[in-house]
Structures are given as structure tokens and as C-alpha cells.
Image 1 (tube, rainbow over the protein chains, first blue to last red):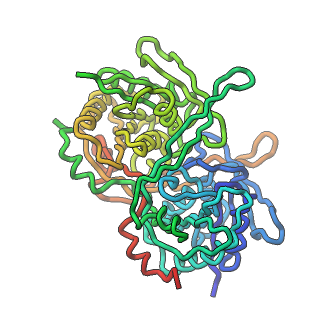
Image 2 (image 1 turned 90 degrees about the horizontal axis):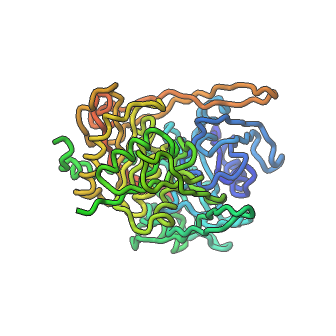
Image 3 (image 1 turned 120 degrees about the vertical axis):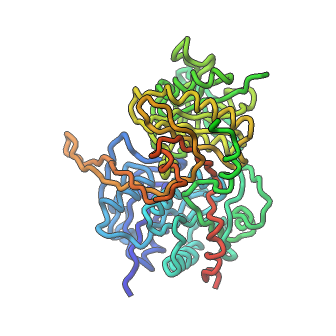
Length: 259
Length: 259
């Protein structure tokens, strides 16, 4: 059987251990090409580079454990996917896989996630796509328990097909060496970040801020990604880019907008 | 009656004519405070500044026609909303209004939109929010026909309440001086951008790219924002930040993920 072709990217940058692990896992089941940011792009959301130039070059990060073909790109994760599909690959890949992110992209984090924006960009282009994130922000996090699950999810997605207009947001709990208990298909939990701005003064007397905050879960549902993760399961949320709140249209049509 | 308090922002930057027009319109019906990016942030999607410092300062852009209180911020539109809510305002605003964007944020453009990311950020915080965009990219676009409609939409939204978990994405057609025909509540049209990368060589011999592309409408529905705009109507799409594709969960549960 011909191996599938998978385009890999991430938002932590091309040298991030999460991506390097993903390459090794995916090489076992697919031909892989990497197009990833040349520097960390966390929190970039679905940014694209429209009023600036993009650089891209062929790189070798790890001759033995890397992918046969890797490109770094000066842009965002969404830029990497656009460039990979349009300029670098000479055929349509069977899938785009993004990650493995260093840190959670569950619940409301999906909105701010560069990892997921890469997957969504592929989905918009009609290509099946999955974003993987490990709920551990450490640069030297242990990705070894992720491999078998990631391969299983990718193979099942290739076999069954991801529903049109949807990409998968997969989060893996931090389980300190133990394997996750299994995989649960979930909905995105309601949550937000309680922001706090840490106000400081620069050496030249200019005031500046650091954005900090605490995650606030507003959802007690047992069908959410947060609940699955808290129980030691991998969460998998089918994520769509039609943002229309269809169920509210009728209600809003009762407003007096055209009188 | 006490005037509502509205926080205004945008993604084209604090000096953009679209925001300056919005300030004048909103001042007629509300107390306004402006917190907007100090430089253009188009295409920033839902980016936030997490590994960098944020600067903000009180500014006067236009003593007569401006807002009594305006702050510029070095961050993204989502940063501006976070900073405005957390640090600058001393009470919760009744609404956050973003725009008026120079250019369309209809259909799939909502995903890349800094204007809408500001509205969505407010929505996540539980504050009613609206993003306005004029389908005209010109810096000197004519915003005069927008005023009455924008005020009507804001007042109706304040009166009726925007459904929870939802913000409004309002796009105004370019009608060359004529008023739009009315307002239609719509769904987001299916579309994508057919990208093309314009490859060039820098003076020092380095290859670089410009991202260009053509908008490709994939949707013939008459209930879409694109259709309303093409007929000369203002489109209003209730837009949600629960990205779960709820209707696909049952299907994916049939995959063999835990065997």
C-alpha cells in the first residue's frame, strides 16, 4: 500500500521537541514533509502575513531523526500551511498534522492557538487536518506516551475521513510517564482567562505590561474536553470554521432592524 | 436615561478613518473610550501578546472629533480589549464595538480578522460585542452612509441583548454614496482564498514571497452574508466561539479509537 503524504507544522517553531517527536511518530506511517515557523509563534491565533514579506528555506535540523524534506518559514503557522500547500508540495497531501504543541489547546484556548490555526487553515482548503497538544508547557516534556495514540488517531482519521468543514483538536493529558486511559470525543468546554496585567517600569522609565492570567473553567459538563483531560483521557474535539451561531438567527430576526 | 458605556477598538490602528468615523457615530448614543492598536494589525486573527511586553499610552488624535479618553496600545486587537477591560476602564462597559474595518470580514474572512477577534475577545468575557466592516479597502473610503445603520444596530443590540456565546459580525456593502438597502441576518458563506505566492528576489539576492490570492465563493445559498452584500444589503452574522462541530460527534464516536 502506498504511504499517505502528511504535511507537518507547528507553532512552537521548527526545532521544538514536540514537532521533532511528531516527525518520528508520523514517519512510521506516512511520507512526511515539514514546513514550520523559524521561531516560536504561540498565541498567534489565525494570523497571516499580508503586508510583509515571507522567507522560507530548506533546512536540516536532525539528519537522522528528521524528515527527508524540511522547510523553515518566517511566517505564522497558517502561513506555513498556505506556503506548504501552494509552493512546496507538488501534490495535495492526504493530511496536515500540527503540533505536538507544548501546552494545552483545550476549551477556549483553541481560539488563541497557532497549532489549531494551522489545522483550520488546511481544513478551509479541504484537506483533513489534526492538531495535537500535550498539556505540559515544559520544553523538555515527555512526548513518548503520545506516539501510539497519535498514530492511531491519524490512521483512523485517514480511514474514516474527517467530516467536511471540521478539523480535530486533540489534547493529551500530562500523565507523568503513564499512558493516557483512552480517547474521548468531546465538546469544547466553556472557559475563559481571568486576565491580570503585571505593570512594570523599563530601565528608561517607560511603563509596560506583561499579560498574565488564570484559566477559569465555567463548565461542569462531563462531555467536555476539560473533563476528559482531568480524568486522564485524551480529548478529541471536532472543530469547525463556520462560526455562525445558526440557532440564534431566528431570535435576532425579531429585532427591529429595518423599521 | 444614562448613556451606555462603549469600549471602541479596531485593527487598522488608532488613526484609521474607519475608527475615527465610528467614534463620531457612537458618541451620539454612548459614552465612549477608545483602546486601539498603535499600528495596523490586519490579518492578525486572534493573536495575543504572551511572550512580549505591551505598551499603552493616553493619546489625543483629534481634540474635537475624537473621544474624551483614548489609549493607543502596542498589541493586537485582542490585547486592546483585554487591556481596556482589565486596566483602563474602571467599570464593565455595556458593549465593545470594533471597526469600522477598511475591508470585508464576511464569510471565511472572519477567521483572519483582527476586527472580529476584538469582538470575540469581549464575547468570551461575557460582554456584548459587535464588529463593523465596510467592504472597501480604500483608506479614504466613504463611511458616511454607515452611521445611521451602525447606531441602529448598536441600539437594538443593547435593547434586545445579543444571545450568550455570540457576537455580531456586521459587514456593510460598498454602495458608492447610496445607502444600503437594509440589514439582513445571515449565515457565514462557505468560501476560501485561492492563494498565490509571488516569488521575488531581494537586493541582496535572498528569495522571498508575497502572499496574494483571490477570494473564491463556494456557496450559492441566498441566506449567506455574501449574497446579502451582493444585493446591496448589510449582512449581520451571529458569530460564536464554541467551535465544536456538535453534529459530528456521534459520527466520530463510531471510529475505532479505543481498541
